[in-house]
Image (cartoon, rainbow, N blue to C red; front, side, top):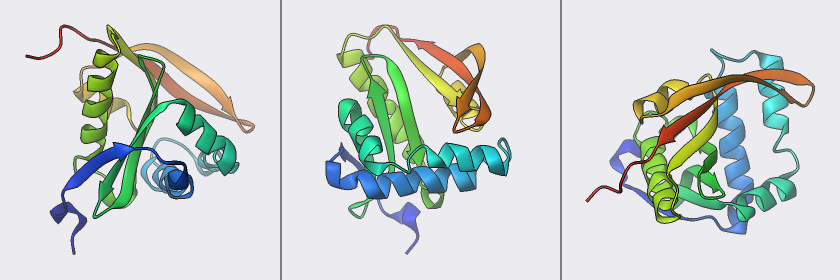
Length: 165
């Protein structure tokens, strides 16, 4: 059955989700970012979730939502504080099927409900066009050290106007 034929749903993160979300993270970085980051960079990035207990605590400390199809997680996103998107990852099998947009729209709504007047994110080169389509603008180019490798990303920002009526 084609994954696109199943309707996606959102739910809160549960600690039991940690292993499958870590695998979505790994698969997403490995398969979706290869045009923008070399193998050593992707390996270092993926290693950042090797400590699954720490990864699970990070997700639990933030407002984390999980996208599912047929009850199985296919993506997740997290909001740090009221206005910073920390993570947004989609399984390669569900990429380009609207899951990222569903997750992003939910985070924006949650941020607005928390009183945020803007959203920020430190965005991979791969995800930059996605967030530009959602109204984000580049603010600052960055190089960050991850497990001994340098990865480029872009600090982006979106001003939030009045909530839609």
